[in-house]
Image 1: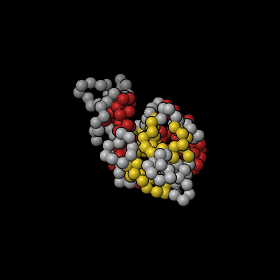
Image 2: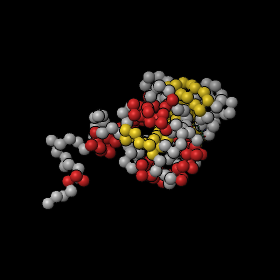
Image 3: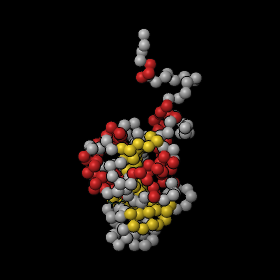
Length: 226
Ligand code: GLN
């Protein structure tokens, strides 16, 4: 009598390979309602992630991590409401899903939007005269020196709660000292666009976090098996 073997994972034993979920590339979603999601997808793929464009709540299933890209936070918020993504996104963050938001993504994560980071983002904070600029930013814990940061109509973090780790600030100029990189648990956010430079250290940090969290959930090692 068959017991529907195809639907059942093999029983673990010393002889069988570990379950696929523990060895395959991590699945990283990129919220693809609006904005520069393709640039993130390219970088994440180069770092060994399996990519999934996320536009619906179903596409949030079984992700190991999620990126919320830059773009226009008002349009993105409208899309999140339209697709009823806010609640499932909040639940995933509560369950420890690693999330990285850049620029508009940072705004979407803040107290006044999804409310999954205890920060208040100030939109277009650097002012009209300086729509876009580039600067080196020292990120705490980041090996290899400052990160070259591209700011495009960027927000800064106006307030950060006690549970938020400030990772980086602008140095020099009129915005000296403004917070532009933060982390709270598994949620990471930058005012700038690390997907637009050839320096992939911020994404690498995020993918490491994704792998570590997944290993914690599955009890597997963090080594990648292709
Ligand atoms: N200014 C945009 C906003 O407020 C963010 C810009 C960006 O993501 N590059 O949503």
